[in-house]
Image (cartoon, one colour):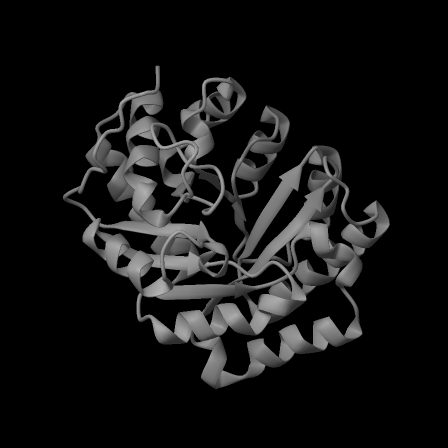
Length: 271
């Protein structure tokens, strides 16, 4: 018997979507998605760059919609694509005043040894060089880490003093060691629909040790749709379900989560 779908709550307080991929959403037009998201009090959104082909596209999206911002960076799956030309492209966009007004971070960068779609040495090189770009431009980073806790920690230790604005370990699914390290280093942890999955007790354990001052809300849409809408394409307007579950796990009022996550997002990304 299928689970009964709840209406998506419209919360009283504004929400910031810190990680999604508007260029990948297909269930509606971009205009329709943005309009529906507005109805659910999603005040700002960050659409994330992942590969050489969407570096310019995410900027164009951010320039079209006043509430959308973007990043510049290559996902670890694309580590093999990181080269001098791509680096030059990222730097040009960051240095172009007409574009960089909407660029709020370097990302999505990091390591993924679960799928290993790019060789490890190329992932490591791309990660380190993009971290240096963040240092040079005084930007925070949006980090993807999967089955790579040890190497993620080792690399971030090398940037402990130079990466001033830190960033977020997004879609956090790693072990408590990385959680403790990241929090001690003043990183934020991003939580999304995974927090609602039955088999995600490890993520809820990480959330339990995360101070309210270090929690960010995200969907990573079109992926990782929260219950009770699993099986549907994810979108930013499902964020209320993520916030509700976080409040339940942290045993605090939903309003408390919304206020902290909103302030945390502003503090990190400085919209």
